[in-house]
Image (tube, rainbow, N blue to C red):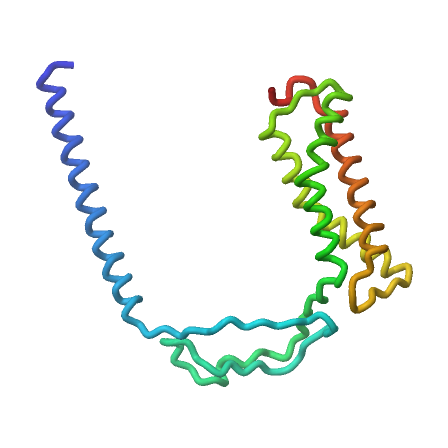
Length: 200
């Protein structure tokens, strides 16, 4: 490539780049204008609303919902927000025992589980680095709520009705089952981990 061709190509590139910069500047000005418009609009501030559904058991909800404040620019009357009478499923409240069991499982995963994993590594002749161990334990942590719900449902199917307060016997029973599931999963994972896939 001659110097002349090089400068012609450089000139074209600079023209293209200048066009691109101008287009981006126009877009930025447009976005800034839209942002100023949005900031100028009045805002509705809603304070924190808390609902406690510990003892409330609602299976279905029917009727009309009337919203008292129309958002700015909605332009419609309150009647426009009427909800068609359809059945809406309301999720059942979280069982009273759920939180304490979650805390025990989290404490186990943050402490003892790491040692269990290292022990299993020695048992199966594997070597994982700390990042890989953390990844495995985080992946298991995402699945523990489902297991806790499963065991709570199992207790409910056996006729167990949780008291209004904590029941440490059942908490420990379910925690031990979840812990056993975790250890079994770790064992199966390391046992079947193909050679060479572990991090060193």
